[in-house]
Length: 263
Image (cartoon, rainbow, N blue to C red; front, top):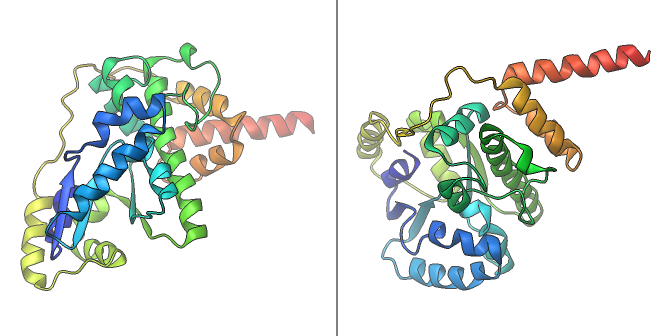
């Protein structure tokens, strides 16, 4: 939906993973990040050649290996940090069979815990498929927070959003305005927006079922394995709007019990 929503703005090209496609090159970039520099040179040349003054591209993999090289080139694009419930996102990856480092799809399109720059945790081979999917979701959030810190220091423009935010027309306009986008004919834009949000976007066509699976303890185990390397990130996760409340309650209960025992 995000791609279509940005088409309501004037003089704006909005596309989802067009050619040259980040996703095609991601495996090479994970193996050697220097591949990203050559790819980005071609990508920027392509963007400069388009007719519209504004360019929006949505991608599931851009943040997994291309943002930092792009910043090294001195280019600071406006960033949309899109999130939803971590568990639901991990379940979606699991159902599609997109398990990081383990399945063909996951090895291609997901981050890899064995690759430098990814969210660190120990012994990823011991994790279940669902746990690796949950780790993959956390990794994306980890990279978003890293980008936020850089942009705060450098004066970059970004916006935190959920897909539901774009169901509100006025909120959509405000997000666009943050990036310098305008809709001169507001009523035309409003009709376009209503048509977009009325459609069902990106349905999950996964073949695996997560019915009957246990999520709380497996997710806590992943968080624990990450906490040995990035405890402040875990604090950010637990205070976010996207982590399941049962995970937070369970962890807080354990901490309180430990404090009580020490007392």
